[in-house]
Structure formats: C-alpha cells, structure tokens
Length: 170
Image (cartoon, rainbow, N blue to C red; front, side):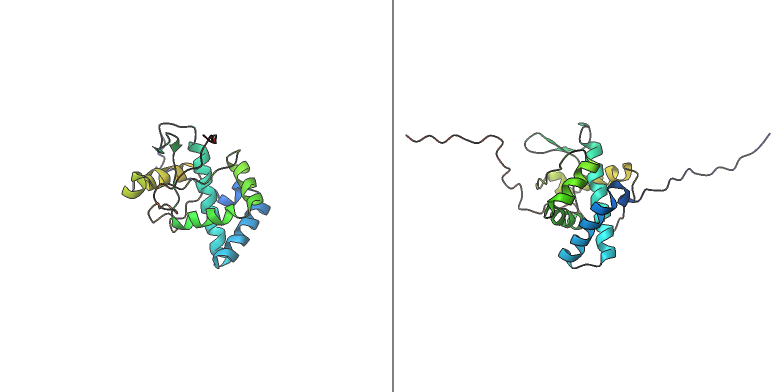
C-alpha cells in the first residue's frame, strides 16, 4: 500500500501577450503609453488586461445563458473597468493593430458599444466579467479589475440605426 500526499492542482495562468502577435501587442502598448502618459510597463500590463477582456468576450459571445441583455435584446457578457476601457479607447484610435488583435482573438472586429446597464450599476456585471476573465486561463491582474464596471458615455447613448430611414417630402 502506498500513501500519496494530497497536493492541490495548480495551473499557471498564461501571459496575455501571447493572445496576439508581438508586433500587434507592441504597437498598442507603445500607443497607450504615449497617449495616456504612463510608463511602458504600466501600458503593457493594461494592454494585457484589455486583451484578456477581448478573449473573455470572444469566449462568451455565443453563450446565451451567460451575461446580460442590452436594451436591443443582444447579449452583452463582459464589461470593462475604467482603466481597461481607457485602453480600449486608445486601441480604437489605431485601427490596424486593433483590428488585427480582434481578428487574432475573436475572429472578427469587436465593436465598442458603450451602455450603462442596471447590472453595471449594481455590481453584477463585474461579477460576470471576473468569472469570464478567469475562465480564459490568462493572467488576470486585479489592479485593473478591482473597480466597478463603468460606462464611458452618458447612460444609454443612442445606438447607430441599423436601417437608414428614407426621407419623404410631402
């Protein structure tokens, strides 16, 4: 008979830099550092968390039982905190690396749809988001996720119309 000591299974979270090519990561991180006037180290950590956020979105987008619904009825599963949203806004300004990151992680362009939901206001959204972030297997830096999810825009700004209205003059 042999006795084996119990050891909990531990897994090492993967570095978020590996979600995209080194070139794409570096372009976004350099831009964030310059745009937000932060150190390169901080920018790299922030970009890493933004990429984990995109990964969590991509992993959850087709799971209707996870997350919340937008007023339009579309699923909305993960939400950024203020520092992660700041990276998202910066990344949107350099469309080529942002588009490449989206394609590498999600397989398609990920649109930024600012909205303020009840779940964001009551803290439920960040709970969903943290679960989704950890489920990716990538490093989650709680310095970037310790706050509440916030909307970067006024509550529920008008969304772009899906179908252009025809103008008729009488």
